[in-house]
Image (cartoon, rainbow, N blue to C red; front, side, top):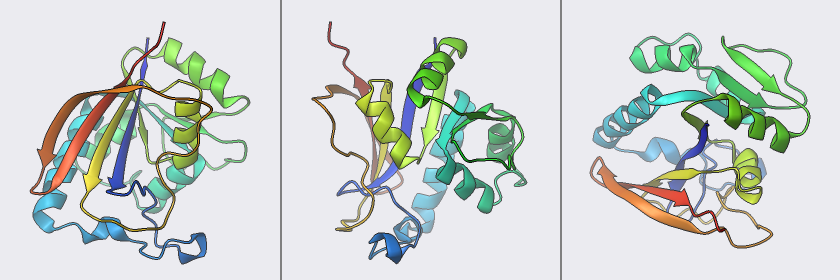
Length: 194
C-alpha cells in the first residue's frame, strides 16, 4: 500500500506560495529565490534524494503546470531523469495538455481516486506544492507524512500550508535535520486514532 508524503517548502509563518503573484495577495512573491547559493545546493540534493526514493508523484493542476513551465520535462541530470520516469498523477477536471511523459489525470472524485491510487502503489507517493490538494489530503485523512523544509523568512501574506479542518489532525514529529546552514527539515507522521 502506498503512503502519501506531502513535501513542502514553507516559510516560518506557513506560506507555501512561491510564485511572484501580487494579484493573489503575496506581497513578497518569489521568496524561494532568496535562498543562498550554499543552501540551494543542499536543498537540491535533498529534493533529488527524495525523488529517488519515491514510487510516484501526485500534484494538483497548477503545480503540474508550474513544473512544466520551468522546463522539468526536458531538463537534464539524474534528478530530472528520475522525475520524468516516475508515474505522475495530476488531480484536475480541466487539464487536457499532458506535457510531461508518464502522466495520468485523476478526474472525478479526488478522494476516491487518491484512495484507489494508494491501494495500487507500493511505496511513497510524493506530493510537491499543490496547496489546494494538500488541504484536501489533510482534511480527508489521506496524508501519511509531512516533510516541511522551513525557510527562515516571515512573509505575512500568501497561500498557507494549513487551512481550516473539520477537526484535529494529530501528527507526531519523527525526524529533524538541517539542510544547508539555516533550513530545518521537519518530518511528521499522521497519528491514526483507533
